[in-house]
Image (cartoon, rainbow, N blue to C red; front, side, top):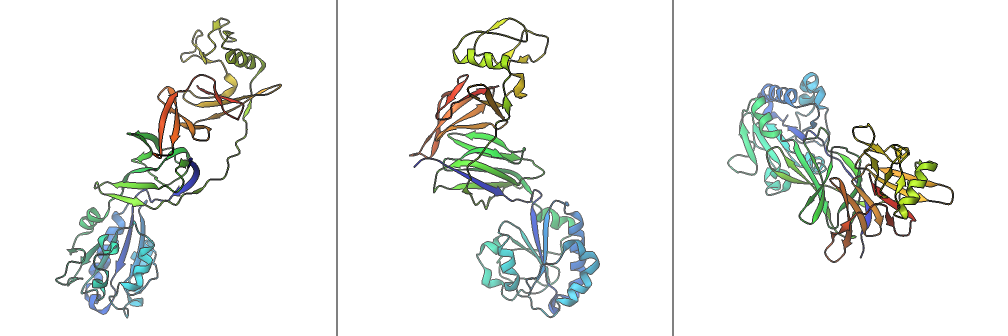
Amino acid sequence: MNVGAYSATLSLASGGSLALVLDASESAEAAQAAISTLVTGLLTALPARVACSLYFLGGAAPYSPGDFPLKAAGWFRENRGRGSILAPVAAALDTQPDTPIVIIGAGPIFDLEDWADTPLLARTTLVAMGASLQGEAMYAMEVAHPSPNELFQRVHDPVAAVRIGGDGFMPLGWGNAGYRLARLADAFLLTGERLEEFGTTLRFLAAPGGTVRAAATLVSGQTRAIALEPEPAPTERLAWQGSLTGAERAIFQAALRHEDFSCPSCGGRHRWDVLTCTEGTALLGTPVYPSLRAQPGQFALLQPGQDAVRFRVTASDVLPLEPGRVVVREGQRGTVYAYQPAAARWAAAGPLQPYHPVEGGGCYVVLL
């Protein structure tokens, strides 16, 4: 089966995320002041871009972390009658599968054993501000009486890099300019490193029924999977951006015949495949198609008609040619890749030639 076109949205808090769960039960009442001081200090230390959520044991209602310093006393009274039970808040935490959890309290959580060996406790740090939250058992990592800075250093582990790839993956466009196309062995990836924001929309080709994955590498070196739900992409209807001038059309027509042409910039003759005149005074040369208003390294698609040659310029590193074939910009040259269904991989099919024809579209591609 051939390759399919898909789109997806990657939602990811750039500074990481954190869920705080506090114990307001009677067993932790004596530690309320210490818990409040620790939470206030931790919230102050967290960068603003960290997505933080706040809950209390025994309930599922979320609270605003930003309001904690002013409303903490009332919230503790509101939740005093609730038991030290994890189950009610666990459902809310399960909707945040990539978020580290910190439970702060004093005394045992009575149903903690029910969550032993689950992904929930694997991403949970217990903080005892009095008696242990798990007794002599070891259901989760536990620390006792940490300072706000110590707890911050332990739980703040933001994303350092993201990689997106999979079976037959070939990115066509993405909304976050910080991402870059990369090739690892015989696979193509979309990678982002040290970005303020890692979320992005993307459009890509992939093997139908295959798996496309996103993985985040944290500052600590740990790697975690990120949910990515591809959907069939709607057919793109890209508009033509303009038409060549009469002089440019003459150059284009000569190029299709592989004939030298007269340059309107320097007045001399150039080979048919020249795209930039270097004979003038411009440091980087003068494009022979100034109407394109393109930057070096961009693809231009040219479509001749009866009275005009229309054009469209794209800044993407990848341009689809026809089903199962794309051209990828690699440095200053383009390489055509053909999809191999049996291996769900893309194989190089040769360099992009100047004025490469696109099957079925009556168009030609140049890499400027």
